[in-house]
Image 1 (cartoon, rainbow, N blue to C red):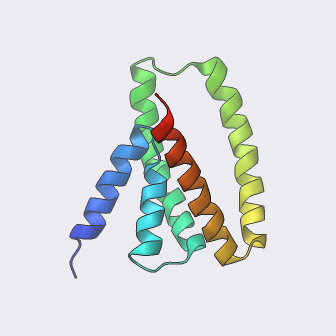
Image 2 (cartoon, rainbow, N blue to C red):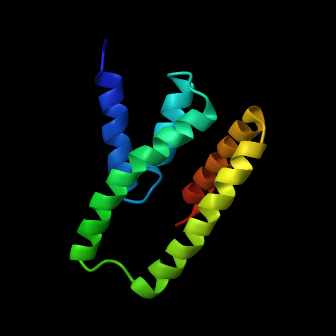
Amino acid sequence: MNYIPYICAGVISGIFASMGVGGNGILIMYLTLFLGMSQRMSQGIGLFFFIPVAAVSTVIYVAKKLIVWKIAVPCILIGVIGSFLGFYLGGLIDQKLLSKIFGGIFLITGITQFIKK
């Protein structure tokens, strides 16, 4: 079995994720488009992948004093609540609709980033 595509996808996703620019989304797109996994399975793998990347990145950012805790803590708390809500809603939404929502968010984000200065 050729592991090079898996390694490339993991490395690129890890680099982007550690910079905070959507590496998890890249991994999810790779898993769904190239490996044919379901959207839900890809998202689960993406979240599992994100845990060690986020832990390492957080340690580095804390060591370099690049985290503004007054902003980070409320975002973390709201994000945890949002993750439970997203998990619940993701189970209720049809697989095809979930894929369209995911693609639409990616498209809007990409256009916004492209237009920004």
